[in-house]
Image 1 (tube, rainbow, N blue to C red):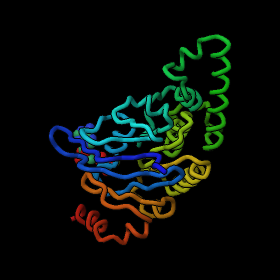
Image 2 (image 1 turned 90 degrees about the horizontal axis):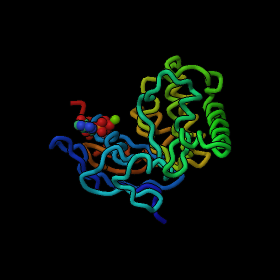
Image 3 (image 1 turned 135 degrees about the vertical axis):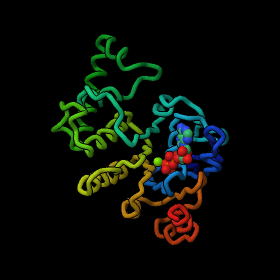
Image 4 (image 1 turned 90 degrees about the vertical axis):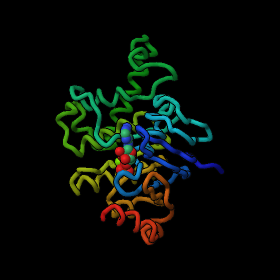
Amino acid sequence: MSALLGVRGITRSFYGVSALSGVDFEIEEGTLTGLIGPNGAGKSTLFNIVSGAFAPDRGNISFAGEDITGRAPRRIVERGLVRTFQLARGFPKLSVFQHLMLYGPHQPGEHLWSALSRGAAGRKREAELAERAFSIAKRLRLDHVIDNRVTHLSGGQKKLLEIGRALMAEPRMILLDEPMAGVNPTLTGEIAAHLSELHRSGITICLIEHDMALIRELCDPVIVMAEGKTLTEGSFAAVAADPRVQEAYLGRRH
Ligand code: ADP
Ligand code: MG
């Protein structure tokens, strides 16, 4: 049995300064894995590399048995591996519905707008995408704001839309970078419930989150990074009790 995602020996420097100096882990299909570590540990940089935004200096990434190291982000999305961004990115003038439609799964090598302009087949595809957009909006309880402009959404609704965008690609795995950051406690609970539901529906999830109560509640296993490396991995209880993990967090505070 091989893991769904394999991260092996990843290193990356920026302007001669090392950001990642040896990241190794595997994520099994069907898990909701937490990725934690002090600020600056390299978690977001690792997501950037896994999703194809940057190439690593060394090491490789495999997904579903295929080497995806250095592939274009769009190709990686097509394989079923999708990331979300900390801030919903932008097309502020678009409605929630239009925004979701933009991210529908494309035929290999095909752009949405050319697909849509291709007669009957294009119209059928547009109808399918629209249905998908509505059902995702409903699933995330964004259906009542589906015609609102993205700029008129609350912070929490923007986070949900970012998850919705990822779902439009029909992902097998989602990488979430602090999807609850800056959101009030009620909405945090709501987003957590959505993540549990997506996980139960069969999507593999890797979650970066600094709120340890949420990590404890949602994630098993938990991978810990510090100073550009993987430090350890295990159940929340096991990693929280690990002196090296405590040291990594304390070391940053002093
Ligand atoms: P985390 O998400 O764990 O808080 P980051 O991945 O954001 O950590 O940052 C790890 C290190 O990589 C930091 O020192 C950061 O400054 C550096 N880094 C990340 N991306 C870039 C970039 N594009 N250019 C320069 N430095 C970067
Ligand atoms: Mg980060």
